[in-house]
Amino acid sequence: MIYFDNNATTPIDERVFDAMLPFMKTMYGNPSSVHRLGRIAKSAVETAREHVAALVDAEPSQVIFTSGGTEANNLAINSAFGKLAISAVEHSSIFEPAKRFDFDVIPVNRDGLIESKTIAELIEKRPDFVSIMLANNETGVIQPIAEIAAQLNERGIIIHTDAVQAMGKIPVSFKQLGVQMMSFSSHKIYGAKGGGALIVDKSVSISPLLLGGGQEQNYRSGTENVAAIVGFGKAAELAKAELDARQTRMLSLRTMLENKLAQFSKVTIFAQNAPRLPNTVLFGVDGIDGELILLKLDQKGICLSSGSACASGASEPSPVLIAMGISPEKAQTAIRVSLSHQNTPAEVLEFIELITPFGA
Ligand SMILES: Cc1ncc(COP(=O)(O)O)c(C=O)c1O
Image (spheres, rainbow, N blue to C red):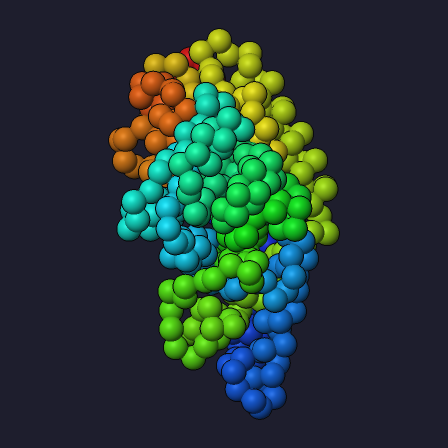
């Protein structure tokens, strides 16, 4: 089997699994308990908090653990006030909660990027809260969040960024980006599903989604998912130590794949000219439905997605590509390869061989 769907989820790193296991077996204490088992769990949660904060250059006290990226995004949007604006390429976990508000949509250009003049126009509309993702899950396009945040901060506008796909793939600094909130997810960085975090600048007020025992500084009540949190911390620690090597490896595989694809006249790589994650290639073969290629390759043991995983199976073209001004027919051809540092050049070559019969 070849696994090229790492933006949907990543396999758990063996070292992460080993770190988690004791917290499901012998060290099962509740972090709120005063006795020794409780203290062990509490201390493990706090160590994980330090690792997550270190990976994204934030303070541990700014980390609120959640059940994943979706909850982190919902917590951020739930804390929005006044006029809300979100980008046209956000994940459904931003779009859906935003529908509770009257919100503006910030357009992207043909490369999937938000331009500086678009932000200047947005500011004219006087929004109070803006959410723009750092890296897109389908195209891999990286937005210039630091510049955008500087423009917005100057006017006192709050900005949240969904950095779920950026974490562990490119350097991310909460301090340098200048945003007030940032979302992350553990299972995109070789941790377990069901773990994530919202990083929050405490000058901003947060409206909790869950009320109860007051865990996570009252921002997220509920007994902590200790094993998942410990795994997230371990995954963050490893990602920080190995970030350079992982980036280099993914980029060399991506370059190899793109060079091979460039030899096929009917292939388009979407957003090719924009700054992109080192692991993501969204492409299409003219006239061939991406879903069809996906299903045929699945029979050969290759795992990939056509656009976002949640949109897979639905026949609607990707809203992200439509927002970029791509025609629905062309958008329908999209197939996403999302690589991992664990992939090999041999896997890329096998993939190329298998898609060649599709007239690539
Ligand atoms: C950009 C982005 N945001 C948020 C999420 C949701 O994260 P989770 O699966 O942890 O809820 C995803 C997952 O696909 C994503 O790609």
